[in-house]
Amino acid sequence: MSLQDELNKVNERRQKLLQGGGAAEVERQHTMGKLTARERLAKLFDPGTFQELDLFIRPLRTGFDVDDRELPADGAITGFGEVHGRPVFAYAHDFTVMGGVQSVGQNHKVSKLVEKAIESGVPYVGMVDSGGIKVHDMFGRTGFRPVVGGSGMAFTSGIFPVPALASGVVPQISLMLGPCYAGSAYAPTMADFVVMRKGTSFMSVASPPLLKAVTFADVTQEQIGGAGLHAAVTGTADFLMETDEQAIETCRELLTYLPLNHREKAPVIDLGDDPQRREESLLAIDMGKPYDMHQVITAVLDKGKFLELQALFAPHMIIGFGRLNGRSVGVVANNPAVNGGALDINTCDKMARFVRWCDAFNVPLVIFVDTAGFQSRAEQERSPDGLVRNAAKPVFALAEATVPRVVVYIGQCFGTARLAMGTLRLGVDSVYAWPSARVARIAPGEAVDAIWGHEIKGADNPAEVREQRLHHLMETYMRFPFHTVEQLMAEDIIDPRDTRPVLIRTLKLLEHKSPTPRPWRKHSLIQR
Image 1 (tube, rainbow, N blue to C red):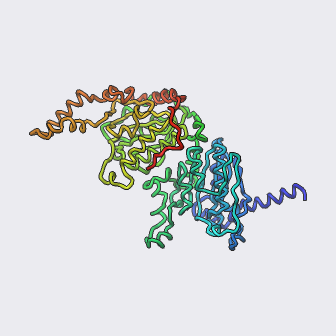
Image 2 (spheres, helix red, strand yellow):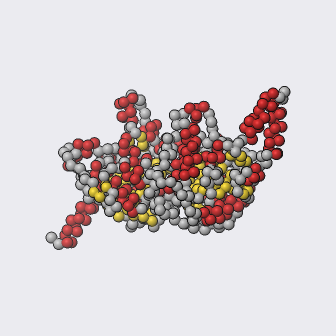
Image 3 (cartoon, rainbow, N blue to C red):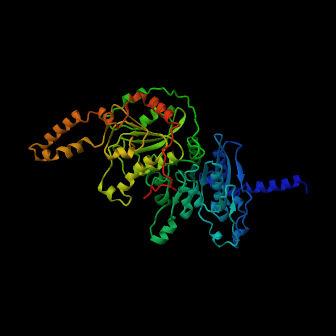
């Protein structure tokens, strides 16, 4: 047989495997309003750049009738390609092949791909659409033996260890486009970013039938694991999308803000915005009323482009990515338009995790501050999550960070809220204040009560005396905005219109700053 004949035989087999579960299953996927795994990968990668790996894998022999079925690629497509000209690894569950169930062979392919991403220093994307675990493989007669990669890493067929190994090394993105239950849901939620599609993606530790069998409770997929739940209530989903196409396009956009790995910086992308641009609209903000901090953020960033994360979860805290003079920045901001921008369990957890991600991947932080302070209610303090425990998380994250951190005080921030949002003594590199800033180590009212409380209580007209003392304090000791710079809590009071050029100049100065020496350790212990 000639080489051409051998090649023809390979190509014939390849074409058969590329059909996945067949035309009927492809049509079923389309009827559900979902793209197939190959269609999804085609939209993720730049045309003509995808290189598939392990297409010809033979599924585990189990001794059951399932062995007689053709399961192309063992229900998952893996490979690498380019997104906006930069390398990316990806895997996609193929729901047309036995519902994309996660078999031993499939998990081997996926964990091998993630380890290749780690070795190569390249991000990876996981497209999740799986009916669960392939139960037959639990009784399989033969398995896959670990093989050793070029760096000595063992391909263990373990989808749970590899996200932990990749954490802080390469960016990890999960696109939840279909269901994922029980233990198989752990791996995608360990990713750095989670994109979920409304109506088709579900994620929970137990499926509704299992919950009913154990607890006799009738619940729906949406109630215990729907995309809306994870976007607005649990905070697990960073993005909530309507279609596969929107989810994939959001993933492509997100990758433009991220470096390839922890040793590099994000790419510089010039959007053509003048670094010296002054934004007149910022003077028109009525600081006497609740305003939307998005106005400030979009006015300052290049071309007003801001990719917000977790927009529906704890919306009084804003996090996301933007650019200043072409360079990626992580934005953290209170939003006075929602609950006065107050800090609570969810906002603190949301902020801390984002700060730590930006620090791990060399993305500078810009923090806009205007908060009513901590929402210290009895239910928050008594919550199993613990307000005081979560309040310490952003303080810890900012103190631990080594990337450039710049704070801009827009409005009020008093007492312990200052620590959560970052101070110079906490290690923040630069702090600026708008003329509207009202920042102090203690709130004026609290200071009056602490200093003159006894006098006020004993007065015939306590409200009037308290008001007099408050006026005296504000005129003599707390003349805002000067109090903030006089007490060295900020380094300058800037014209709001100059916020953009000031930030760009500051970040340019800090671009090559030397990291503060730290004691050696395996890792920190922020979670408690």
